[in-house]
Image (cartoon, rainbow, N blue to C red; front, side, top):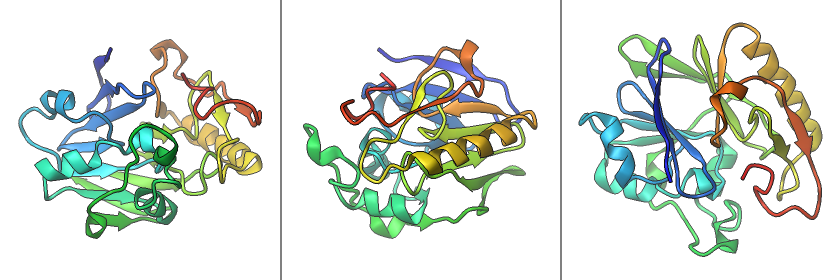
Length: 221
């Protein structure tokens, strides 16, 4: 089951809840996506304008598995991500799809644009997002920041513990990233996370998990 709704911001944002682990794809004005899961049912949210680019929060497979399909349809799309996420895109073990039913490797490495902390991406029409490094869940997690929004991926899911027990997770880094996200949210920005949560808990009430016996993403289902 999917969920669609329109959120009023300086940049209009539409949410699509994907079929895999209830991950979210956020659709921004101008054909920009934050993360990419199911593609076919997402297309109506693009309002006929097609896709222009994808802003990846990180490279776990539940946030990237639709990329090959998307780029087959829209060859002009570029994928913006951290250097670590680029490695995940090209390695099924790093993106964890190897351990699930359908291993995923991104077929278009030439269309990846690597960003650093502070990189600004022009969305057109006077809008832009800034990459904010928020490592911990993975070493390469990026929060995408606008004047009034934070697209945090799995670095911050309000009301849900941040998973740090996956390979390359780091609890101490995650704690520092949460503090950073809290400070940015305190300036009047709303958090839009990487998995579906009740809109009433879009806050920064966050905790951490590093329990070694929990399955991947068990804290966010």
